[in-house]
Every structure is written in C-alpha cells, then in structure tokens.
Length: 227
Image (tube, rainbow, N blue to C red; front, side, top):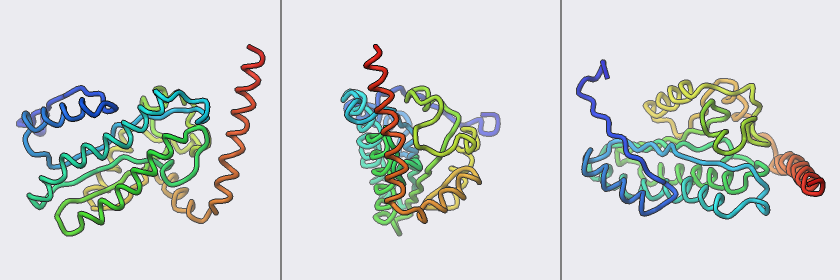
C-alpha cells in the first residue's frame, strides 16, 4: 500500500462450491471494481480418502470448487478481456494433475481438469492478447494440508523435503506469468523432479500409487475391526 497509495483492496467472502454464490461475487466484482484485468484461480480444496470410503458431500465440494468454479469464473471474466485485447488467467493446478496419486481420486482428477483446461484455454486465446499460465506446485506451506486432513503431505505426493514457502510459490508463479510461461513448477528441486516425471512409464506410476492405497485400505480395515 505504501508503494501504491492509490491501490484499493476489496475483500469479498464466498463459497466457491456454490454456483449461486460464485455468480453473486462476480456481480459484486463488476459493480465495485469494474472490468477484471487478471483472474487468478487460486482457491482449491483437497481430501485424503480412498474414493469408495469418501463421503459424497466432501467429494462434491472438491469437484465444485476445483472444477466448476474455475470454469465458471473464467467463463464470466475472460470474454471482456478478449474484447479489450488484453488480460490474463493464472490457474493454480498441482503436480497431482500430471500424475497418479492414491487416496485422492477427486482431487487428482480435478487438477487433471485444470491442466487440460489451461492448455486448451491457452490455445483458444492465442493471438487475443490474453495470457494463460498454469502453476503446478508441489508441497507448499499453507492451510491446504490442514483443511484436507493431510498434515504430513498427501499420500503418494512429492517428498516433503521439496516443501517451499507460500511466498516463494507466489513469487515464482507471478514471475512465470509475467514471462508468459505456459507451465510453472515453483521450487528448483521440485522443477527438476517434474522434468523427469514424463520419463516414468504410466504403468510404473500406477504400481507406485497402488501400493500405498492398499496399505491405507488394510490400515482402515484393521482400525474398523479393532474398534
């Protein structure tokens, strides 16, 4: 604020898993701020449970927030950018959207959507003056793990030694966006790991995901039997 004294910040609370609430916020943004120059689809929720053992309420919330809200906000705010010939979309995906992860089927699928959506949207908007960048972080210090019930990191996810601060993630995300990158992997070590990921056959990824999933099922069954 000291560097930009004319900057005006408007904070609007919303439940992004509720389409009606998303529409309300879109209307408020238009009323209070006018045309949007840059859309950052950062909100996201996760869950840690085998799909057959996960409650639909939580699964539905993950899909509504991570998939529907992303498309809904983009559909509402990008067309005016195209009309003006400038603007940008910064989508926060995940490394989970580029691989197979156990005990997180809905979350993993939602981030696969963000990956495909971002790549196709970037193609659709080529030559319009509207930029599209996808950021795929690994472990980041934030409230995400606590909210998802994965305080030690998501099962089958990147090693926790690759964890970076939210500030570093944001800096590298914005820097990549400003450079016009299609895909950003924040964190040097994590970036190297993700560069090697395409070399791992999908069959190997499946086996690596299945082993911890089987262990989770055995642990859950044992806990149920002893309870």
